[in-house]
Length: 109
Image 1 (cartoon, rainbow, N blue to C red):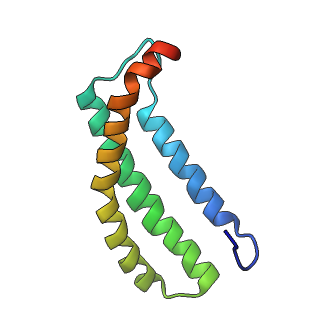
Image 2 (cartoon, rainbow, N blue to C red):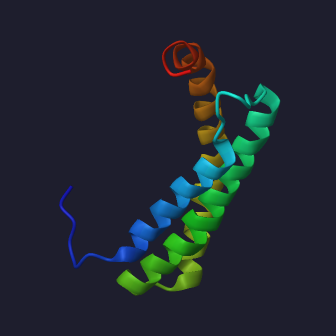
Image 3 (tube, rainbow, N blue to C red):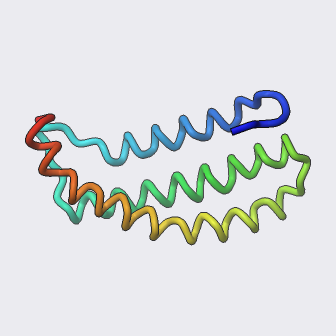
């Protein structure tokens, strides 16, 4: 809510990459529907890539640059947090898709 310090574009780049990863993995158009199994596999892969790849390594690098913390210490703390978040996000996102899919098919397609 009330950030301190100067604007650092690295965090914006990280979040843009996360959005790109989810968009590339989970996009489906009206002509090519994904089955639940295929969606779940893509969801797991995109979460691993986004949370571990971007969330741990890139965001850890940005924290190291902006806060001056030791990179290894930042990595170890972020790895644990992101690994815990992977199953939570997969369950929430899969459940939301199942609940919202009828509304999407009715109003968007």
